[in-house]
Length: 421
Image (tube, rainbow, N blue to C red):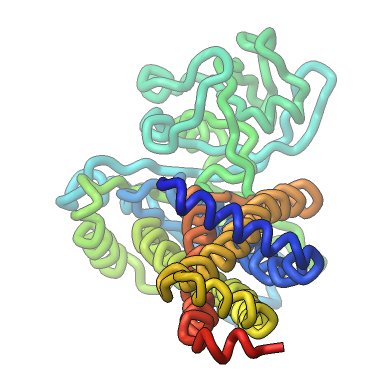
């Protein structure tokens, strides 16, 4: 940067300091504009990132099929005891895993609620009966011990893998590995503890949300069967559900659509009613990413209005400054200053004003998301692009809204300017 430019910047700063309060109030528009842009984009990015991560945990190449209870026939509602048979079957799992193309593997899931007892602690636990493929498909870090293996499944071994949440509820530790846990009257050996994924609410949940333990599917089927009893409103309802979920992994993300169509076609052939529901995380992910882009554009546009208002404020003040400094401009022109030098002088002042306001606004934009996360618990993410974008826009506003006052100052006739009182 040449010495002339440095002198012009210094002169611009000195001119702004002559009217400290006015310069400060003018700068506030840019400060709040930049701060609001950074903060609103951080809130939108944090919320979108949280939703996208929960969807990604389901697996972008996975298809989740869930059993749902259909509407019961009203003619059976007056019976004291009735059995509802619905949902996915072991036959469905076999057909999906063995006959459909574009399928890498499928994992069956059976959900159970059983009373668990570890030493002197007793409580209701939520269990998943599944196969070893589950731990490859839905990855969770291993805290202690091991997960179940194919030998456990084939030999109907009574082993149990606790989640971190289940271990906390039972006050289990690494020393618990090898101890016996009683589940519904059956003793299981605790062989491992894995990290759990606790649901955060909303419509998007991981397949193992709020689960306490995993047991082999062969044991869940052989020891506990498929019938469960629900007591409600003075009646007893017995439900028979073989599988509550089937998680299907496609060969690749490109084959998810074909695999989903194959699963849907197969299920329609063997189910005469809608007692299942399919969820495709890839479709949810694509929709969420599109929503994220729209959300960011809307938030950025709203916050950009604040920057526009700040720019109008800068132009207004600089026009007033041109009027106040008409005689000064005339003197400078009279002693040989060129029009481009006058333009550059006023542009320097507006750029200094907007750049300083942009920098302070960036600091404010960093502070607000931290306060939101601390007090409201909402996730916020400040991205470098939002900081650079906001600072660039603030400097651009200084140039755009400073051009007209600068050009107006340079266009003044020196003789008329010298006569100005």
